[in-house]
Image 1 (cartoon, rainbow, N blue to C red):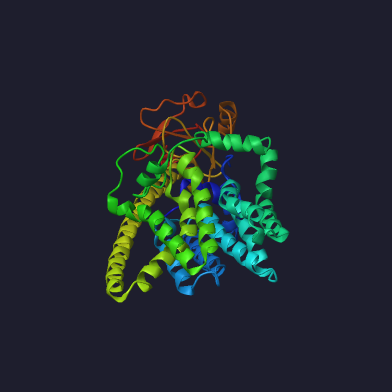
Image 2: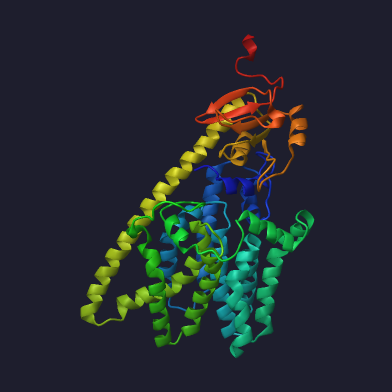
Length: 458
C-alpha cells in the first residue's frame, strides 16, 4: 500500500525523494520526526511500513507495562488484544499518521500518572508521564490537551494527587512536546491563536456539530468521511461500538466492587474528553480520530470481560464463556473483513497516483518539476511526491504559490497542471498542450524543450 495523501506530506518533510510538500496549520511535525530514522535515507515504502508496524507494536507493549500493578496482567493482556484487534488500529499501525501515537501516549500517560500518585518514592513513573505527555503533544498538541484534561484537573480536586511533581511532569511534558509547534506558529502563521484559527477554518469551523452519526458511518471503512453522507453500515459492523459504553459501565461497577475505582474512572474520563471534540465539535468524521478513546477505554472493557468469564456462578459461567467466545469471534471476523476492503480501496487509489506519476515521467516531466491541479479532485501532493516533483496550489487550504509565480516557474522548469478532459486551463497555462495521462486524469504541460517518447524520431 503506497503512501496516502497525509502520509506524503509528513514523509516529504524528511525524504530525499521530492521537495517538502506544503505544511498547513493543523499539521504537526511529530510524524516527520517519527519516520525520519528510515525516510531520511530510504525511499522504500515497504521498509517504512515494517519499521512503523514494529514500532507501534512496541509502543503498545510499553504503554500497557505502565499499568502494571494497577490491574491484573490478564486484564492488561485482554485490553491490549482488544485494542489491537480493531481494524482501524491495524490499518494505522504501519502508517505515518499521528492519531495512533496520541492514543499510545495517552494510555501510557494515564498509567504513569496513577502509579506516580500512588508511590511518591519512585521517579520512573514521573519520567514516563513526562515522556508520554511530550509524545502526545509532539504528535497533536490540541488532542494532547483534550486527552490530558482530567489529569490536569485531578491534582486540584483530589488531595491524594496534590503533588507538585505530578503537575510539573505532566505540564513539562506537554510544553516540551508542543514547543516546536508553538515556535512554528509564530514563524509561519502569525502566532498560536492565528494558527488555531486557520486550523479551525480548514476543518470546517469548530463549534457545536453532532458528529456521532458520522463516526458511525465511517466505521464501515471510510478513511475520511467528508462530507459524511450515505447509508449507515450493517449493524454487525458497528455493534462493538455500541457495546463499548455498556461494557465500560460494567467495568466501572466491577472496579467499585474490587476497590480500584480511580484506575478505572480516570481512563474513562480521559477517553471521554479525548473523544469530545470529534463527536460534538466538527462536521465530519474519520475512524482514526477516536483511537485515543479506544485505547483508554480498552482496559476497563477488558476488566468487564474478564469478570464476566470468571465471576459468575458455575451454571452461568459456561453460558457467559460461550456467548463471549461467539461474540469475539464474530467481532474479529467483521473487523478483518472491513480491514481487507479498506486496504484494497486505499491500495487501488495509491496505485492510480503512481500510474499518473509514471505517465508524467513518460511525458518528460522529471525532477526538477512542479505538479499542480485545476478543476479536479485528483490530489497533486501524492502524485508530485511519487514523481519526484514539487507540488503547487494557487488556492485552497494548501495554497503555497500564486498564478504569476507559477507562470514564471514554467519558463525554466517543467510544470504539469492536472485536470480532466473537459477542464479549462488556468490563466497561466493557456496555450499549453493538453495530454492524457491515466484514466480520467489529463494534464496541461508547460511547453519546455523537454525530450518526450517521440522526440527522437522528429
